[in-house]
Image 1 (cartoon, helix red, strand yellow):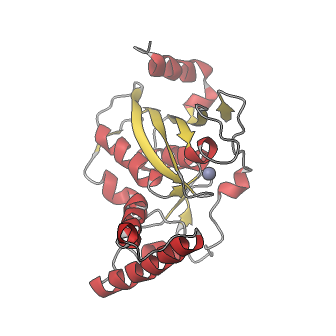
Image 2 (spheres, protein in one colour; image 1 turned 90 degrees about the vertical axis):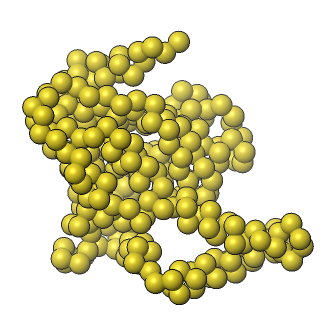
Image 3 (tube, helix red, strand yellow; image 1 turned 45 degrees about the vertical axis):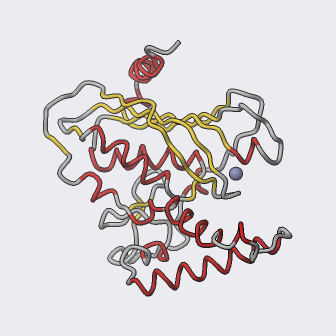
Amino acid sequence: MTSNTSSATTYPIPAADCKRKDNFTEDLSTKPAPLTDGVVVGLDGLSVPNDDTRSRIDEAPEQVEKRLQKMYGAVRTLLECVGEDPDREGLLATPSRYAKALLFLTKGYQDNVENIVSNALFHEGHNEMVVVKDIKCYSLCEHHLLPFTGKIHIGYIPSGTVIGLSKLSRIVEMFSRWLQIQERLTNEVACAIMKVLNPEGVAVIMESCHLCMEIRGVEKTGATTITTCVLGCFKETSATYNEFLSLIVLNRK
Ligand SMILES: [Zn+2]
């Protein structure tokens, strides 16, 4: 489900487009495998959109330096193309700074779900709804490489197993530090929780503002895009989903 609180256009995409399957083959021993609802998580728990991202994890220092040098050259070219002098004082260190910033902003490619949740699953027998709301989220739109920022709200009903609450934020952090679209990010967070906890159901709502809408194109400031992913009992029982919604707005003015 996708809705928008203003008249601005969102980015509806067919479900099939969410499936990053181009790089996958049937050989599941070496390739990431489809998880559920279009999300891809490797069998080792590593979530990656393609083979190249894996190479960032185990790089030797000289390979890191080679990657950075390549990025410096690319940023320098961009500066030249916008009509700047990359050799003027203020821009001398910009390629280096930007390359390092971009690697930080995409550091989710070097993380994986398995590591995040390790030692943080507890068999508590708690079967009531757990909600963590207002998780701050910073991501980069893959269409324009511009930020979109907002909040994610997560609810799940355990089936005997709960997860350390901070791990939900870390799952959000991991997926948001990929190049993303909001719809897919929402979906991936929900499906990852479904996969690692096998709960009765999961609901994820994300609300955010996209700089690519605010400062370019239609230049619609103040528009909020809301996306949801609802799985299991949240999908099957409207009362459950409504309870989740009421908890999210609780204590809001
Ligand atoms: Zn964009």
